[in-house]
Image 1 (tube, one colour):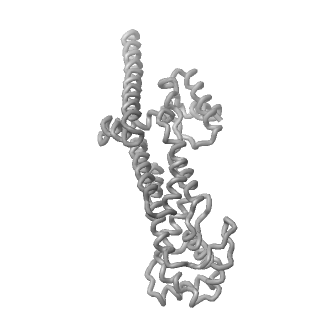
Image 2 (tube, helix red, strand yellow):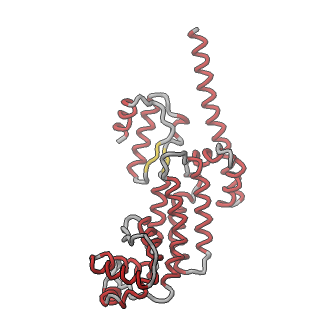
Image 3 (cartoon, helix red, strand yellow):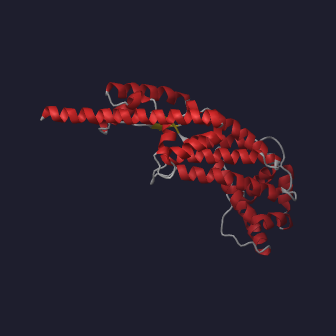
Length: 308
């Protein structure tokens, strides 16, 4: 893989690579190391490739939420079964629309069934379904098979979700509110028409705060989901010494933040002692990076003078 990337860079006449963003497959660790060696040969590997490898934040977010959804609430399963039933045939969709008209449900959105491997589709399914609460609660009066389906259909985990109960929609809206922040973050960092690197550390801090608040929630289902997500969060962002320093430096270079914000945020996340130590390391690395660029510029100026 590294050879193919190297050949592409040569073809595109690009010999300077600052970072490479990849997902978290273990094979990518080897690929980036080999690519770093290639850049060493070209003498263009900044800081000996220490910050070359950047792990894709969107992919990490996906892994975090997927772990949390393994503890998914039964209310969400009931909504999924209800949506699956309505979408399974034109006749059932027609009866559902009749029910919506009778209950005066005014929503132009269309019910969508989620895909297990795409957590954001679960969020979109729930966010849409909540608008049809009145229709789902009365659908058994328009379609005799709806109640039977909920009571007999086996879910993906081998259990039966059962019919709706009074707290289901309240629970579901809590899940929607919880997942909304992850959905917004994913949309934000997946942008291709604007710079996103300076947002990464700020978003990681907000996510950490969001999970901590949800862990302390009175809602036991949200607390369980948050606990599972927090474990995965710590795997990737819980050990700052293993994180790419450019995540912090990009935030430092943002005029909105600077080093003061980064230092404050690190202390909030990891405690005062570790936070101050890491802030000093970031400052040292930033100065080293500046020194390397300064050295390159001086060498270039010296070469120009000699050639004259």
